[in-house]
Length: 356
Ligand SMILES: Nc1nc2c(ncn2[C@@H]2O[C@H](COP(=O)(O)OP(=O)(O)O)[C@@H](O)[C@H]2O)c(=O)[nH]1
Ligand SMILES: [Mg+2]
Image (tube, rainbow, N blue to C red):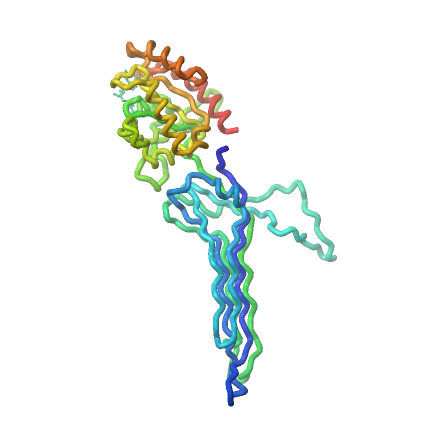
């Protein structure tokens, strides 16, 4: 399950009411007004966190509710503000506000009769935020202002006002969160497997640095055109650290990025031209990924066997097929442009399936 779109419900806190009260003390029966202000309601806030990869937590907890402000009280005491909630979202989260109703109360027409909701009405979504930068905050629903206590209503003509104001209601609403993808498919592979060469060979235009300013890694994104006007985006994400083969891990930045591709493409130097063993490479990468996130390990994947122009390729491929009998493997030579049409066909099918 790859949760990249969720519906949530947010309620900011209501403001606390202002207080009407009068100062009382011995020998001073007619003290002035001393009712304090109500506290502000808490906000519902989103904060972009590097430690969150998807919108899973909102799927399990779609109701986001901040606390109400407390009412003011006598002796000019203000009510305490309601606690805000700060929910963490991954970079690349886009927020839409919906015009769906939160409460079930109907609207009424001129005659006071309830207006039946139109079941065919399409909901309207307005984009309200596009959160990309780590640490960035966005107030989704603002808490209501606190009401004023009667101390504010004293005037020359009215020394004993009983007036106060109510706290304002907090904002509330229905929202959709969407995690923007870096690309439809992302390359996973050790350095020198041929990822950059392949991205260049498949892309209609020169691959561009992805427009995500939240990282030191710079994913390169290319566009591949399929016959019949459809196209897909492919990302080459650097940062798979050299030490991965010494079991020091893939680097979490890298892994975080590939969670944002629907299909994982394992690019392997099937000729083993740098003395690496392609079978061990893929087994190691698979293991690292499942250690990082078992949901990511369930993401659709396939193998692109590169460097078919080199002599050791055929023998290694045979061995590889025996080791991974169920995996789709497409042999290519990125440098010589061999097998790229077959690869495109497979990509079109697989990306289509992964997007369902
Ligand atoms: N013989 C051969 N060399 C290739 C092929 N694809 C890439 N290379 C070479 O492998 C080296 C690493 O390629 P590169 O695309 O930079 O790999 P990356 O680190 O995975 O991005 C370069 O010297 C490429 O020219 C191929 O299909 N055949
Ligand atoms: Mg490269």
